[in-house]
Length: 304
Image (cartoon, rainbow, N blue to C red; front, side, top):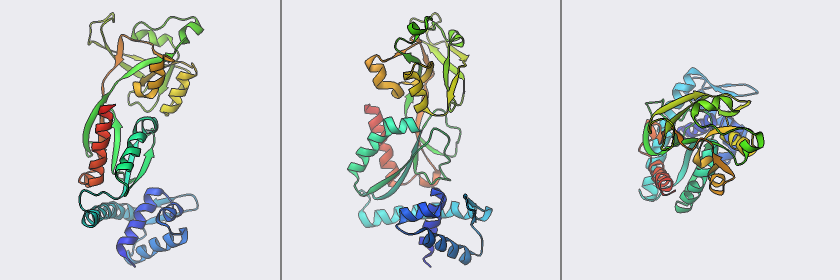
């Protein structure tokens, strides 16, 4: 048995969540992948995966082994890539993560141009508005918006995001109500809450010229409404359907704001600045592909 190949197979089984998915990616069958992992377990004398009809789960021994195997496989792949093709030619899989709406609207064009520039690279793009454990899923680089909770990640700040209160054009006239003049007024409105924000239903603001408060002063308000969601896409569609007010980043409704279909509903108050980072697990910090992709994304977002 090829020990390295078996380790690579095991890592992909764990990251993809099934033997069949790993088999499809590796050009093999579910049965062959299962047998390869079983042979590795016999050679190690330890059960790595707990198998059931519904799911695969790592045993305690499996968690320890896969963590080391993932690091080793990544380092070997990177070394072989540089040896075969030279350090300026990138190849192989790059696993990228981002929130679903940001990934679709802002990251996908950059993935497209990156792949066009590096024809030997393949990208596995994971889009999820929830938290993704980068180590567990074998992610090389992720885009994260907001303060970083995990200090163990290697982070590179690439920009700043601000949110604003937005509504569909005509929303207030249709309901015969006045737009909010200051953050406290939002308590009287139907607000669409994005539940993946760390602050939840508490929306924070900074006063700009034209506000009743001094410029730069801060305010926050706890909002409520009849709709909340963990999906940025759902929040976007709810705003366009006139279902309420949302606290959203400009890129989520960029075209609609530019065309006037959506308006800023609290124009003299803007959301607090949130940092945007590219993050990687420590063991992947030297990946040539991850660095090149990070440079490409940083340049693309800066230009945008």
